[in-house]
Image (cartoon, rainbow, N blue to C red; front, side, top):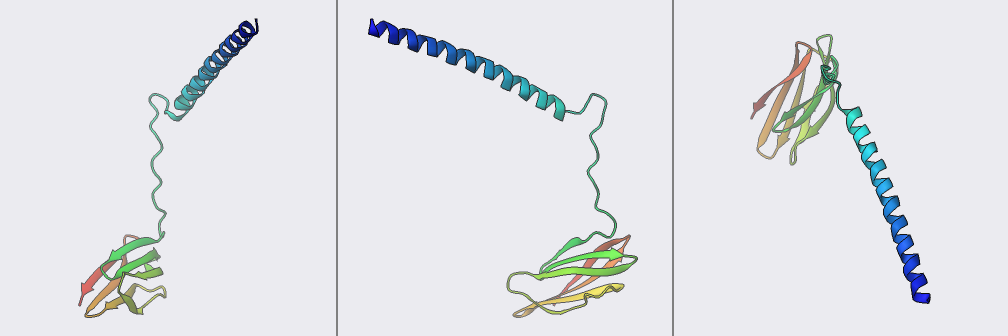
Length: 130
């Protein structure tokens, strides 16, 4: 008799667990479908364009001697930061807003000169290896 009660209890528990799992799986599936539907654009609607950098926002200019982060404001170059490459150090740098900015990175036996200017509102680097 005791064994029959245990079998009945285990069977009832199993039926309840299966029913709850099926109910939960249905809710999870419905929630997943709702999320997928919400993230898909409506038919005929194009996704929004990626934002373009605002004018004058700093740009990273990579050179063999190091990186120069610079921006342009009314034709003036403004250097935000300089980071020498491994083994290089900064010998000289013009950081004040000006029509052009010069930076010299140096290592043993090698020199990298960078001149940053603005063209069409964007900073551009001309690099000379020495």
